[in-house]
Image 1 (cartoon, rainbow, N blue to C red):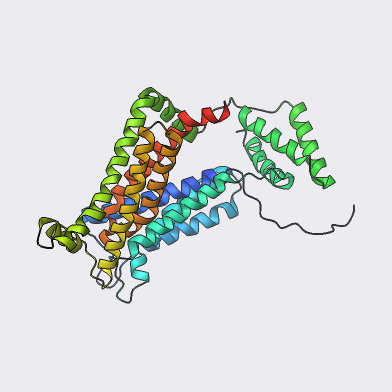
Image 2: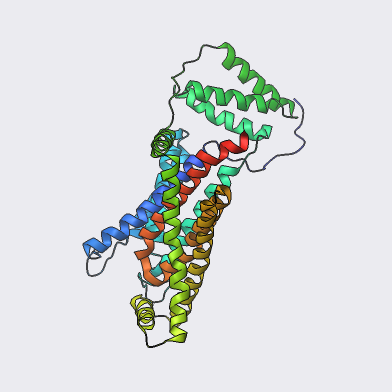
Length: 365
């Protein structure tokens, strides 16, 4: 046995990391929305008495504690799935009360609290996108993932598709320049090839089945109706340009008209009482104008048959709206922007599906 020359502590992305993050993201968003909806409908009840108040942040902390402890104690994959869900629920319940943590008055309704929560959600989405795009077939990383997948064999839960993935990873690990890693990968691969191991029939995950069902429905919906739906969505976004440009012009040119009164009503209807509220309102209007212009450009491109440019512009408009306009909307209108954000996320998925179903095949032909 030879001495180890150096210790390799480089980070390795865990197998199924994308799935775990997706579970965390979904449970985080769901916990915030359900909590706010329940509190609004129930009249903001309190659990406790005249002295004690058991805030839901405490339940979030408990869920986070369980989420941290589970994978430290249990090695099963289901424990990591449960940990992902509990971490999202716990983070959602905890961060929902961020207004109390950043104000001297423990103000749950502090205006910046909503954009803080939404920004936290966007950061998680960004992390998910980064993980999805990670492509690291480095032998050491593949060996880590292969060893992780062997847990399914120990649970008698390995199916034929997972076995194929496992064999590919072991084959990549065999290319390691470290003989002990390459040798272990070769031994495991030989064992799996020559041993009659229990295998389940390949069965797509619930997420894959849902994706397949959506694609079947979407393709039945048809190419042309799909395109029309995107055009309608971009037309609605384009209306933001009218609000952002025409109304301020009316304010300057004709301050005594209905446009002025409408703009004044819009400004005073939001529940923000801070000194800078009007600045943020005008900033949101400016961003809505930019988004509207890009949305109109998307309509022009799609109408001229330049679908790639049209889909790119539509995606850009939606991303700017979701990361900028909606963020400011949460500041101005608290959580009334939730529905708008959910709808725009849905439209973004619709746009991406169009590009994947009808434009990607042209690239590979």
